[in-house]
Structure formats: C-alpha cells, structure tokens
Length: 151
Image (cartoon, rainbow, N blue to C red; front, side, top):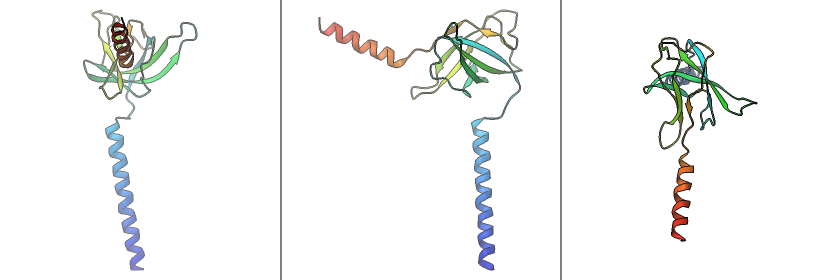
C-alpha cells in the first residue's frame, strides 16, 4: 500500500510538471486570440509566410496572419491579417514581406502612410512589395560571373 501511494504522488508530480510546461509553451508562443479587425493585402508571392506569422509595424507586433488564398482571376496571393484594435492604420499604408533572419522565417511589415483616412475592417492593401529571394539573387550572381569568365 505504501508503495502505490508513492507511485500515485510521483505520477501527480509528473502531471503537474507537464501541465506547467504546456502553460509555459502556450504563453511563449503567444497563441492567444486577440481582438482586432481584419484587413487583406495582395502579393505576387507569399514568400514563405504562414498562418500565424507576425504582422509588425516599426518592429512591434501589431497582428498576425489569419489566412491565405489565391485570387482565381488575377492569380495574386491574398493574405488576410488581424490587426489589434488599438492600432489604426492610414488608408495609404503599404505592406511588404520581410525576412526575420538569415536562418529563415518571415513576417509581414506594415509601412504606414500619411493619410488622415483610416483602413476599415475588410479593406485591402494593394501597395505591396514582394519578398526578395536570396537564392534567386545568389543564382544571378553566380551565373553572371560564370558568363563573364567564359568570354
């Protein structure tokens, strides 16, 4: 009887530790849903963005990517994002996909405009800049130098 009580106590300690670890991971991952309004942006390519990636303004997280879709007529990628209600974006804002680091990972950066009119829920940002592909740039550099060496 004494041994089974010890096993039960140890099992409860392990479960409490697992619950604490899960809570810590959830808190660090910032998965909580925030109130906000949804806007979209049209891009030629998503550049590796995924649902849940950050939307930043001046380096500060102000939202997250909530969905991606393909426009069947124009074949552009529509990225929908949820922006915190405390952040009001000018109507002439632009967006670009930026690399978080050289090791990978991207985020969507909002570049605010100067208009007095604000973006409303459901609005779309058309002034966007597609991401620069590092592998494409490297390929152009290598093949350009290779062609110059054969002449």
